[in-house]
Image 1 (spheres, helix red, strand yellow):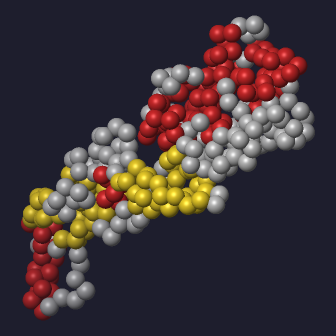
Image 2 (tube, rainbow, N blue to C red; image 1 turned 90 degrees about the vertical axis):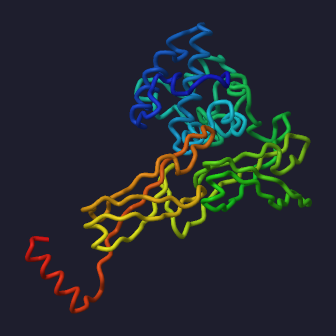
Image 3 (cartoon, rainbow, N blue to C red; image 1 turned 180 degrees about the vertical axis):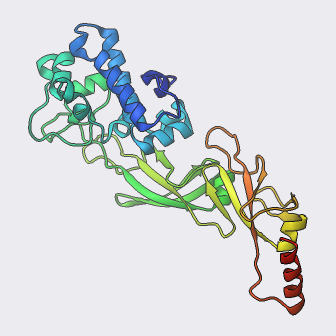
Length: 324
């Protein structure tokens, strides 16, 4: 499908749609454009392909998160057809309506599209990797050793730990990679706003093929190291700050750090309660691929002394008599 297409538009759902809403819409669309109901209709066939690709991404939390973060074009630069359809099988969704996986292939490809009943590899759309699927989606690997097509090299995976500051600004890291009997240095660029679990693909940096096939890919999962001051919630940052009881009653001004923008002064209004959040607009983390920044929040906690002096106790008793 063209990279400019939006998976949400293809299924006709909102970008904030729940998994249940996405599944319901997919079933409606897939049944409407199913080949058995549109025999000989090439337009419906293409629509059916797009619908399945869209659902393969949006029904998987990790794939959907990466699609939302990168956008369509960059997503397809990082994820190939093998990645998109891994773990996707429409059979369970459509069987209640009398359709089977075999029906899909026989309707589109005829007898040559039928899959075998035994021995099919898991983790591929329709549970099959025969030539019918290759013709339909434009990419497939041979499913057994008898195929004349060369095997693709294995993919590699690794984790890359970065700091919260590096996640905010983006970072380039050099990594050492062993492939076969060779060891090489690679530069990995982590985009600003990367969240823990973000998956980066380096095409052609996996294992070489044994018999002249294409080289596998390298997948890098970004992980964030815990920060001593800030905690992250999506694109927002949170900082806890203690104030004295008198400051909570009378108000005060605090100087607080930010992650990458230097210190800021914030005003605490009188009669502030514990747990109050003060917003620092636009001082959070950027959204990956969009540049829009979240906010930072100072969460106020009222410090209670472990022990009172005689004078403090006297003043507290006077406050109590005044209803405080």
